[in-house]
Length: 160
Image (tube, rainbow, N blue to C red; front, side, top):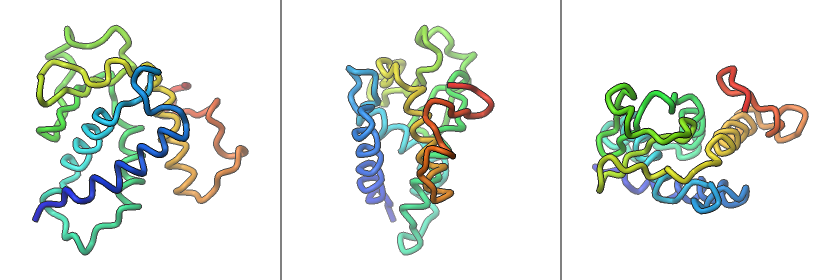
């Protein structure tokens, strides 16, 4: 049974999160809907949600939290995300296709290989911070500035 139905509610929550924080438009450095969709599909395929889960046991909140955590832990400088295959390709094999700014992830367009859907997402570090703070806030149930300040977020010992 196909679990494509889980994409719509998850993408709506994530797009609203980006929109509230003015990070949803690619021409202003944000992440496009298509880019977000491809990253989400990559995550869902990588975690096996399309093949192995019974629809009655799906917890959308848990999937969203897992996605937020997953996105902040990916090593974007080292891989290219291929949503149609649900796998990443090592960076060494296609180094020539990376953009000059290695903090922008390479999310391959499944319709035009070797095209980066997120090439104009120059605020990707801010998007990672937003996803990290959102995950930690929801996970801990605390939204105060004493615990999570967007200015001082440190992901994987990397100061953004």
